[in-house]
Length: 126
Figure 1 (spheres, rainbow, N blue to C red):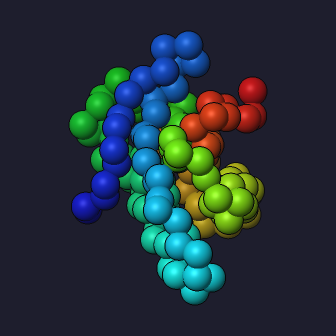
Figure 2 (figure 1 turned 135 degrees about the vertical axis):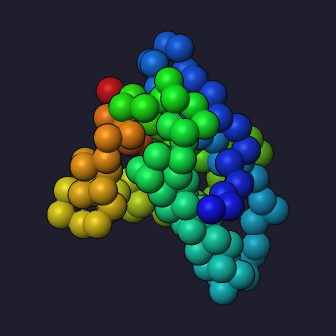
């Protein structure tokens, strides 16, 4: 599995392991190009979730096994509203227990809880 994660670190203030995905444009002005860009980012996020749920993160970072994991999208130069909306929708989707991702996260021995955030949020659920 080949997934581009820009940084893996531990947030010692929360105890979470953090997978940082940097997405900083330039952002397309054309609607169809923005849709393609958001689709690529969505795929990247789901790939990062798979890395966590399937145990690839725990293989490389054994101390992460069974811990809270945060997938954090950083956009240092600012995020367009479309990206913020995408993250909000994906956050709701992956946290629903009735869908495949919600079930996989809940049943995975490699993660206690998974959070999806924008960099400025850190953890919107605590």
